[in-house]
Amino acid sequence: MILKNCVGLITGASQGLGKAFAEALLKKEAKVVICDINHAQGVATKAEFDQGYGPDRTAFIPCDVTSLSQMKDVFCETLQMFGRLDVLCNNAGINNENSWKKTISVNLVALIQASYLALDHMRCDRGGQGGSIVNIASMSGFIPAAHCPVYTASKHGVLGFTRSLAEASRFGNYGIRINALCPSFVNTPILDTINHEENLGNFYQFKDSVKDSINIFGVLEPSVIAEGFIQLLEDDSLNGAVMKITTTKGVHFENY
Image: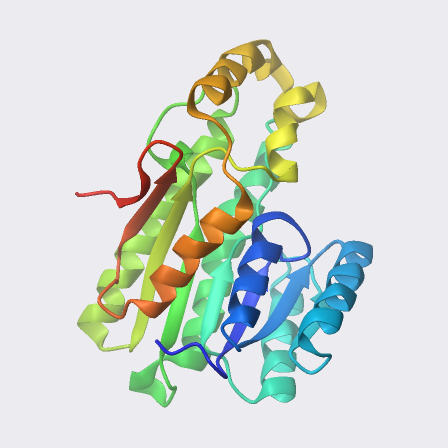
């Protein structure tokens, strides 16, 4: 995919990984819709991007990704403003074992919902122009994590959904590539949740074990993950791929 003049929609894009993905697209001369529930941070990020890339290259649309009606509005506004949609990045995510139903809702249900909305607009077999979906999972999609079992389950679900939908796209000639990105520990606000009992609940007692893992494996910067994100978009051979990024191996892929 040639990203110049493409339009990307990124959820949870006001900070952290989502912001890094948005900026990576802007550097490729694409246009970006920043979707986030954090209104103040979204406005600040939009203003920052306006200074660096011009006011016509981005839009901020506040949205709760778990709301079907709000997400439908985001897709409609994206098409009204930019006339097309080429990329969806399902990045929004939380880690809250106390509110485990909400964690599943944001990390998995909302991701499925947005993916289906994107299919409605992008499927070649139904008049669309094709495109690419990147779902943000985690290394927790492969390994057990005592401090966050529900978060881990949600990321396992993201991988299963991504790979299965990619097969459906291939069989059905949707013209849409669907891939997953699984970073190790990244320097974002969600990493700080391990320090808070209100996030980990009964599993807070295991926080030291994950801190030991962080000390062993290190922490990646969002810009490094953004490089992998761009690779998934630009490499037209990738569909159903599961990209892993770690400090020791860099970018590599899971072989099933």
